[in-house]
Length: 310
Image (cartoon, rainbow, N blue to C red):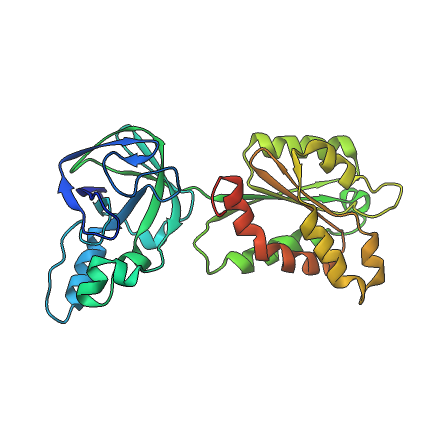
């Protein structure tokens, strides 16, 4: 299906209906002259004409709503925003936009449409973007859509699993937890897997490869204890730009009373460029415990890496 701009809309004040323009200029603040432009993540809003039409059909007074009345900057045709994910991108001519928020909290009395009819389509169906590339937008311009999957890599460190002495169970356990967590979410996940021995050079190589390939999140499992072959934390700490000590400290504290030996784990969390790294112990039980806590903050951490979610 063709995707294109139905209407371009701007307003000088927030919370008011936007009026159509045939052409607008876009810079790193948003649409020039629009009240929502600025140094923040909701610079340019988008809403599908299909959702506006459906909203009109549900109105008891048979009111036909027009583009811009929901304060969206770009009214589109041919895009199902219910399938769009955070960090996806749209290219319209030379302009490139990145999805930064899906839906919003209704302004209530601060929203012109809500005041008129008591409800609004934007909170559930609209999306918000920030400008990646400047340019000019024109009505009827074609829209290219580029889904951006969340790339996750799992690295298992185990001499015995690598040699075939036994099957790796902790790596698949991490993946299972992630799949269950993201099953009903808007993210699309691509998974990658590597099994290596407890070898510092090989781990360093895998980490660098992950960063080069722009992997979003790396989970390592194994090598976080105090045994002679446990080298994971040292490698990760030297490799990272930043450490995130709080989450692992919280996990050790949470489980230390029931499992005293958990305080011996040296698991770490870190950041390298735009890649998150979580180094977990090698047992399936520990993986389950650690993932329960990490998944509470994982999406927020990904957004923070990209300058969002603060």
